[in-house]
Length: 285
Image 1: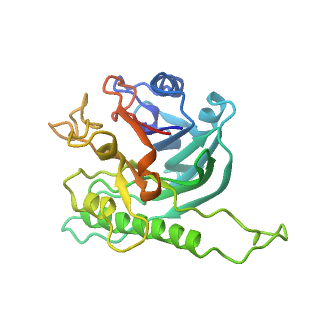
Image 2: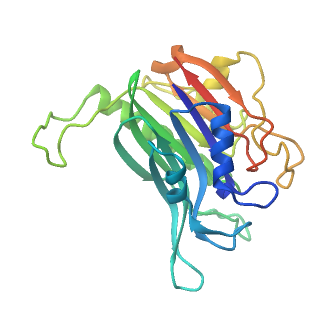
């Protein structure tokens, strides 16, 4: 099973052109993926670089026949002219069966930094996918960039959501076969957490997610499983240094204890320039 995560920057390349098809092409050139997780997907933001005035999840669905596309809007707001809605968030697309989907708003605490900091709401899209390994909870997210206190609160919530999912797997709800919304749903210890986390591997948020306290099914950075003792390949600021002078890795995939033995390969595409981030591939099996 092959999974890609990619902050696609509303599909705007370093040439300033928005082209969803070429992003899909570069992803497919990287792997015949079963699941792709994307961050920074836009609906109706004409003032973004390149003019993201279209419905990007809808276009993406047309470019991925046989895939279901699940878009979660972290931001859902009235446009400045008051005539339409704008949405910005993450999505999961997969050709595998999806048993259930949740969209979780992440904490958005006020930051008391004098003068304020730029920020926006963040969320996590959670899809339980039926895979060769059984049900797997795919969680994809994009954490706060400018505010460390917000980012830590969001990382703590991601860990809480993972613990909650594991608790339901260990102690499932009462079996219900009525066909109502109470009908039984799959719960699983298997989890893959992906996204642009806006922290590096030496940050406190990384330490929290990579080695959580307690006995609940722990999470592990899949890169360290596939490449022991090798530094992370950079995923941001590799070709575009607007946000800093040194390339860094901030796009990760964390896997649950139950999946660590299945980590087969993990790669980063260092060449593509159709976003300001590089795509990351994880292969299980």
